[in-house]
Image (cartoon, rainbow, N blue to C red; front, top):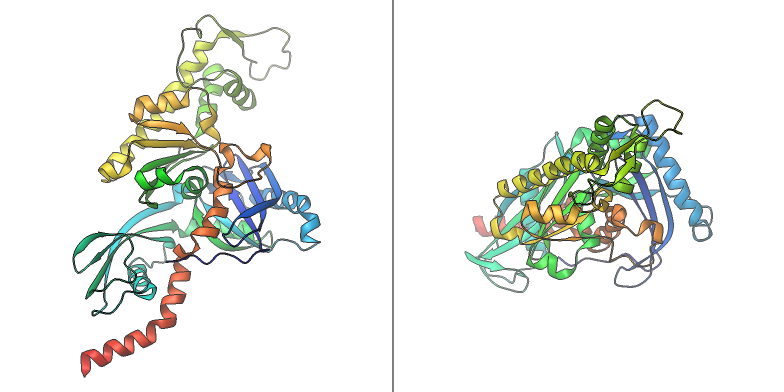
Length: 422
């Protein structure tokens, strides 16, 4: 279905709630193609969030408020005192689940229209309605007309029966309500949700990667999320409750140092793969609880790498298992793109290639121009991708599909009743 772009001049805000940081971008539509310019940016250390889950509503609300205010202040000249009211928000991968359904509708020989596709999508959505989870994405993957497979664009074609394979992504209702509450208490309304790794893929992947088959691995602090793309669409998503913070925790325990110092050591000296130079190089590890740092505590760098590598290996092995269990086979492709803050660890690309046996590159936001340098790295891929989602993929929002399908639904039902009874 064709995407209607937001009118030129429209202001939009996106909010990325992660385990290590909360980020907010404010943008303005600058052309008829849905392109954006970034007017305001805010980011703040995350509080009240652990492993992609809200653990303290008050702390999360305070962090969200600070982040949004920072973005509003930067965009103050354009917003002219009007506070933000609506935001597009990420859905953490650990609270999402992928489902594939097939829906069939009769077209009785007439030309297939967008409404026929919407009827099929709406029919599939009705199969997954539940009080336990919220439907977030409805993505048509493959079409068949009268049993003929491999049709990518059925509109304008003719047939008796239209069949659509549909990837639907749901979010856990309890986790979503807690997230919504912390956002609404900051006087903001959620206008759309987008799976974190889906957004990161929309920001970081080139067209050929999306078309030929590519796995996007979004490595956050508390979670590692996966999105598989093929034929230009997301066909599978999953997540692990392990991320960069677990590596930091391992370092803190293994070297008996503070979490703050463990994070610093990881950034300065960490490597996901051992090298021959590690044995001879010494690093200074501040001792936990000791205020007097005048006496250095030197340990071989190999000790640090020996703590990091097994945990990162475990993450990629679990990802490999998820992809193997998905049943997607060759659709997964030979290409992997790593993004997210934890993907900045030295040597991580080489380790990923070794464990996954695929071509790996590091990704960052490439589809949103004009990002300040401070927020143009892989840690902000999801935030940037939320703009791409609302600009180019909002027709995948379940409510949008139901609203348009129902608008024509009565006449379709009347025609079907007449045909069946007369």
